[in-house]
Image (cartoon, rainbow over all chains, first blue to last red; front, side, top):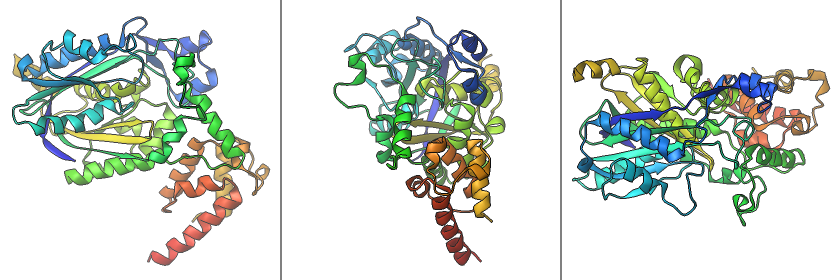
Length: 350
Length: 82
């Protein structure tokens, strides 16, 4: 979808302390062979900080940066992939209460690690639907330090990192213009992440961990025995989503200055996301940042944009492609044009 | 130009095994092939200009099966390309 009439008015990120992969190998949490293959240097670990509190920290930064008043906000979409707090409790209303504390709708937008980018698309529709709606708060936060997952071994394709992120999507200006956004799914691939587990009772209610590697291994065994698994090339979805957004924007990949992508490990990032786009993750991606944070669910792309912008790696006129993905499987993206560099903004505030 | 030997070599490199030790009719998944290996191989063949369909290779994961598909695709592609 072509957007152009929406802006990122504020952005905030909460990145906890790093735990190095060296330390994880030393302590026996992470296998040395996986460390070498992944290229990962560290992941950020929140210990006992609740996931929604990291989203709140990021949201306060984003709201303050936007300069908007509480009354300007028409809603809050909170995205996450892991458990937020007490079952049956509303983390999104907790985030609302601790940030805007105003009686607007708060909802959970659960689209896996693409949640925040899905929020940009849905948020645009939400704001466009009513002329009086001015701004929307998008938040995300996840802490994988729970007994329900082993952040180091849940998948060979990434190590899970913790963090929070937020953006303010607004109609009347910001540091970046949202140019376009798009998604592409392959519903057949939904079965991949089930990996032979039954739907009922849900594994977590039986105390099972989220172990994606075991589910991948299930399909590998099926494949080895002659059964064709429900596999597709993630890169085809990435290419489909990105081509749609570029086409809607009247742009080509050569117009993209940098890509803020999911924080996957080296080879998976290259083969599933970057090579299909013909992009060198080292030169044009956020790999150096990603390999020190780990895959923090829906937080990655926004944290990457925040890093590129605050470190001055992108400035006025640059286009950044935000790239996300989710089990399902689906790839999502958004193209933003930077209108004001971080330095220009600092100057303007003086 | 993709040849049967180049397919065998590319597969051998992914599996970290000498090309001669990969029988043409053996299910490569039994030799350790993963879906990420296949994505990498497909990316490589696409870079060489062949519009490889991932699912076609998933169906029959053997060097013989892949070569049959890739050879056919290459011939088809040569006919439509100037």
